[in-house]
Image (cartoon, rainbow, N blue to C red; front, top):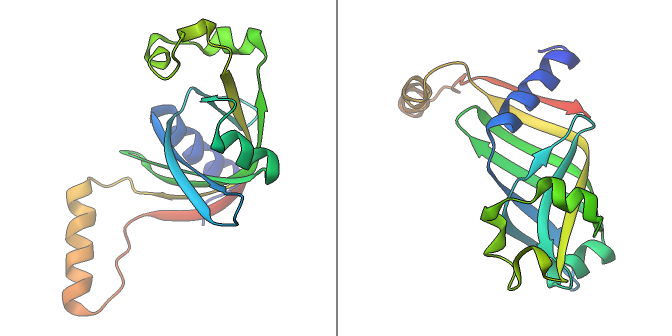
Length: 161
């Protein structure tokens, strides 16, 4: 099992390359709802930042129940991050994170009054990571399916953030 710092280093390594995350909220009827969002920043305090329109169903869901999950899958591994979401229209933070790739989501671009940031304050992260090439992991999975064993395809742990 990895040390707590080793685990945090793995989480950071995955986040550094992440571009798209899947945010899961609880809707107003109590159902889980997941949607892809472009990750704008993962800061040193373990906060994840996303642009979102406010008002929107997602914003209403976060206000009603701020507990969220963020799933990230990329070439470095997979993360499942549990945290608490808040919304902000802090103009300084919006300006610092604004990119042209965000403009298409807002009718009036940067000047759209619905531009908001969704901040996820991360509590824990569970990761699955492998140092092996993907083809080696696929081979181990296939071998385990044939032999009835369990594949060892990398590291898995939960890290407090």
